[in-house]
Amino acid sequence: MFDLTGKFALVTGGSRGIGAAAAHALARQGAYVVVGYVRSEEAAVKTLNEIVAVGGKGEILQIDAEHFEASENAVLELAKRLGQLDILVVSAGISIDGLMMRLKEEDLNKTLAVNLNGAIAAAKGALKFMMKKRFGRVVFLSSVVGEAGNAGQTSYAASKGALLAVTKSLAKEYASRNITVNSVSPGYISTDMTAALNDAQREAMLKEVPLARPGTALEVGATIAFLASEEAGYITGQSIRVNGGMHM
Image (cartoon, helix red, strand yellow):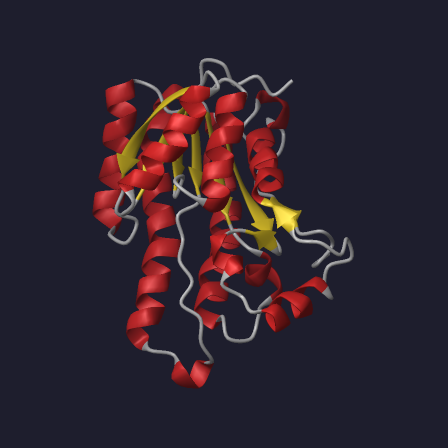
């Protein structure tokens, strides 16, 4: 099951955290994986080397998620060069946290530019190619915060919540072309981002998780790999919650 042999995938933000886990999961199922990164080429190379070490194939690609046209063109040019792009996983994202009274317009704009505009731009580039091939799998990385909200994360919640609406709209727009569009909404996952939390914040979050533990990036990656598979061909416009019951 979930055989992705012969499929070509791009994972934006694929150099670390959930993006890297998604890249690994797709490669394990046989996909050729392009590891997208913004700044850290070293981290992207590390992820790619790990994939190759266990028999996978792929390459790295720098994508400037903050700039719409550059992001769209990078994805489209990659698809044209490879001659194939079956799977797009949009994992690139940032979080600039702070209470509303301290929110700066520049931080809001940057968060939306990367998390929302950049995601739409990457999807636009991929969909231009997928439409002609009449096949595609698009998976956005949203968040439990985009569904339930969280104090001090208004900008992040706005960007991730908007992706859920984007998911539904694109799913309806491209279903006739055999393209599915879904999102994954992780909860408290052990990543570099959550590692920055202090002990009190971690304890508070765990109290909201019925399974009483953080999730792993591998668990989220496995869900993404499923949504990219043939077996998930009748699932579109959905948000799959990987949150240990944190939000139902």
